[in-house]
Image (cartoon, rainbow, N blue to C red; front, side, top):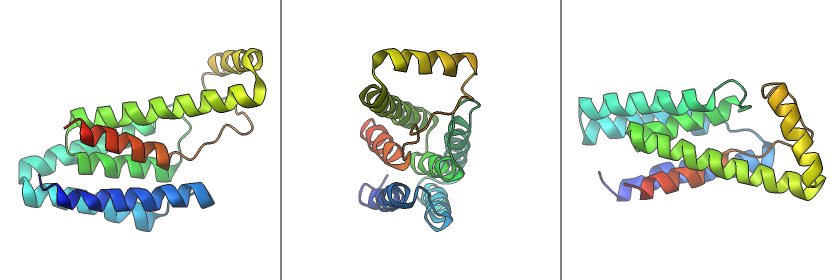
Amino acid sequence: MQFGIQIIPVAFLVCAAISDIRIKKIKNFITYPMILSGLLFSLYFIGTTGFMEAFKSMILGAALLNCPGFRSGGGDIKLGAACGAWLGTINLTLGFIFFALLLSWVVLTVRTLQKQGFLNMLNILKLEYYSQGQATQQGSHIPMAPMLFIGYIAAFLMR
């Protein structure tokens, strides 16, 4: 693949991260062009087999961020789909989601420890377990786009 063209998804991801941090939303004018350009990139440089693989990766990226018990917004799901389209393979998309979710878990754990302490964190985990992830905690929202950005870079470097 053309390495220089990879600045395109990075630019989209930076815009998405800034938007998610500032207004807690990822706008469609960021995600839809990123999805379309990722699919067209695969079609142009790799052909129809690359397009189909990118399409499968796009679906996987969206599906994994839309799992029950994982509170992710629509913009995050579309951004996951866009990253899958740009990464273009199932393995890289799985790596991308793994790194993004791992980083999110670390950030949430550290934030909860700082605010609530260790014992309260254990009680929160117990509540989340028994409610199957449906319990809501004040202040448990973190902007996911920066985590997706870092996950994308990690997966891209795995190539």
